[in-house]
Image (cartoon, rainbow, N blue to C red; front, top):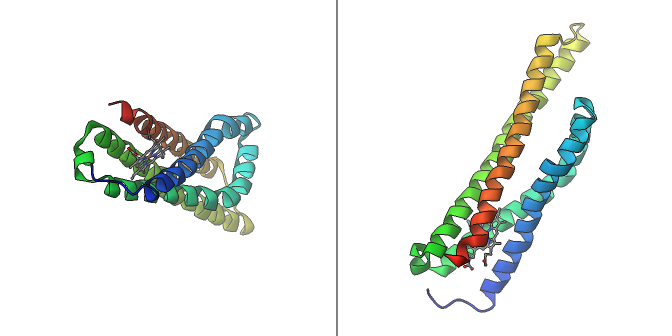
Amino acid sequence: MESLNPILMPLLKLTHLISGVFWVGTIAFLTLVLEPHYRKQGRNVLRNQMTSILPIMGPFLLGATLLTISSGTVMIFLLGKSWWASPNGQMIIFGGSAAILAFLVGDIWVRIERNKLRDYGKQLAILTLEGTPPGPEESDRVKRLEDRLWFLGRLNFAILLVALSSMSIARYL
Ligand code: HEM
């Protein structure tokens, strides 16, 4: 392993751990506590609560995600070629790739599905104003879109657990 900068590396690792804790902690809280709590109170409560939380939470979560990924990527480059080939390095790179996949699922894919849901909601509102309120078919489509969002949320959490586990055990390999 190349000699590491004694100030930059600890600073990067500290940034990485604090932002990573915020990222995984927020998703864990949403998936394990908040969503089941509101789901018990009904689909409408869940929808309203999540719609009010997301705009506040979103920017913080995105910031923490980007900070975790960027600090991790810089560390990988600083750690150098011989580290990349070591079992420890390979496990960290595997965990980092899982975290990036979680970002793609939990942010990009979820954003696409949320936009679809929002556009469909607008379409239904216009139809309602024109005197055609949504029927069972339209309600089913809304349910399907929402269920896909909750599924993606759980998938995101599961992939994050893989990333966190790999990062945590890597140094013992
Ligand atoms: C879910 C997000 C992530 C979490 C919770 C997380 C967590 C951790 C933890 C706990 C460590 C400390 C391991 C140790 O010292 O024993 C660590 C180190 C590290 N992580 Fe992550 N990480 C995440 C994402 C990433 C990503 C996306 C990358 C790179 C693209 C990355 C690259 C690294 C590197 C290079 C180290 C330092 C390894 C070393 O000093 O030997 N991590 N991470």
